[in-house]
Amino acid sequence: MKEEILRLLRSADGYISGQELCNRFGVSRTAVWKAINQLKEAGYEIEAQQNKGYKLMAAPDLMTEAEIKSLMLSLIHISEPTRQAEISYAVFCLKKKKERKKE
Image (cartoon, rainbow, N blue to C red):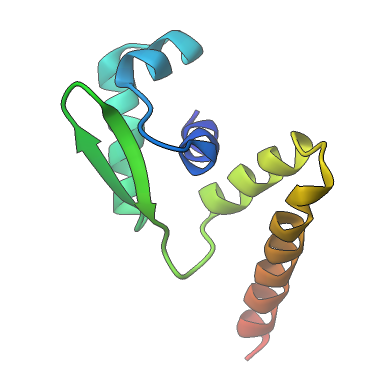
């Protein structure tokens, strides 16, 4: 669920309400809150506004497992050519991470 929430936050133009996330995943507000907190602990800057919801403000510099899974979920949903930049960026980031591990 955490990866899917990250994908939704990344693709949203504005805020996503906690209730919308609860309904989408069939979980409680507490479960959504815990997933959001796990993302924050992983380095994601997520703004929470009462009566608006959650909004992704910034992502960590390093690719986390959640980030990679979220990008992979996004790749599955790509159907228009304007999303090619996201694919290229994801591949670039994965290559860079692999190079860093070799050093």
